[in-house]
Image 1: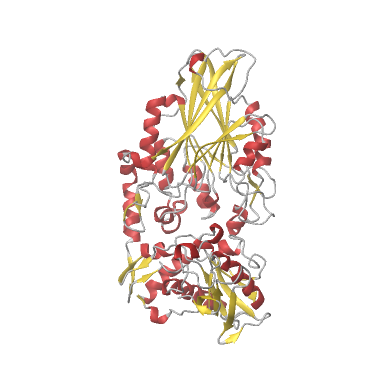
Image 2: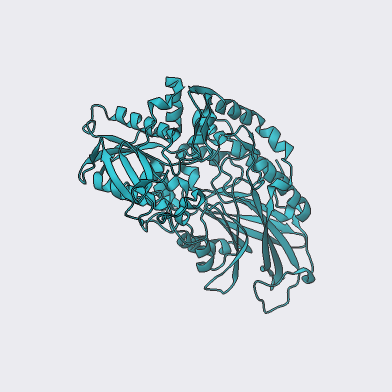
Length: 586
């Protein structure tokens, strides 16, 4: 375990001060510099490895990933600044996102085996000082989360995750780190952890009736004065929330991306280390409305690609430490080698995961690619639809809804997904369905289906008659991601991209007949979408007729294993197409 940062901070002269960020009536006597390093949205990445490609991670921008890379940078900063002058925090989304994380949550769950979670193993070795809960921490249920929290040597924070009945914090709200200063009073750094209110929607099945998630601003208003009252000289908020003040859901929950709002509206905060949006923000200043002081914000991207480094200069004024300067920057992990100590620590669990993801589960009659799936009906997405439809239809046998038509909704999660001709492995399946969603089914009417499809078709930019078809400009209108373009199987329909939004769905039919407005259908759907993810209409209030907590990725693997063959002749059906003024676009 690397050394904790509770020893001696060196003393500098007043001449070394940065440009003041907080005014004072008296001249500073002495100054010290404290450095806070931060990661966020690690998403189960410990090594620089892509389990879906069975190779070292590589993208078009030359990024590297993983805690082994982060560890090397952390060691470098500790060596440069002094290990006793630095702290290391994380802003959430830690235990979900790679086959490694999945394996030790679902295949050999650490909550049952008692083994150390790979993310706890790596983060403990690096020496984190505090870690904040992200929304994806709740994906695998509260028992698995509780196991990971217990295994972490660093406190795991979440001030606004409270018990549903009592309203008391369900997790530790904050921690104060005391850093000794030679010949002076210690510097106290307080860190407040805030998680995302969207957990109440996205993981409703895991938290409903157990936890509530309060407003980030209100929570900070409650706890920052407590932290200051306990003597904190520096207050850092680690927030799993973006900074644009917007939400991906309706107004029933507190604001999703509230980091800048916290900085603006809550006095007493020096900096916000935030995450959730997977953006890179090296340094950003927000003016607090009450005090007029500048609050520093930084976001270190995702997956361990970057490390935020925040420097705080503190001056001794009237017997107490006051922040007089602050700045931040991002360090790129592709500039360093992996820490061999972390690589060695992770070897057994990494090798186990590699073996698992390369297990062959079926043979594919031909190569199936998802490259065109955002704008064409492709067989590889039809495979998801088939498995979802069959799973729900089988579960409804003998129920009151058994006679209703079963439809299925899915989206193009990954344009790079491929089922090769020949052996298909677990990693091929995981590469197609990259999220840990579970399967549900709801009842919708024909008119509701039409509304849903119109909403989904916002994904396309309007294409004028006669204009050339530019695939790069056709999709992702308004920044809509691929995973928010839902395709519906079991009915036929056209999407007319020449028409304005809201008037694009034509010819919606079931078994050759137009769908009636009051006709009822069962629709297979994932839990993220049913709970409000993406803001699609009707599904959050529709009657739920199936919710057996079956993971869709595992259902795909189980189906392939049972049949042994993936043959598009058995499931491929081009039931939707893009048109322009009624004529097929392709």
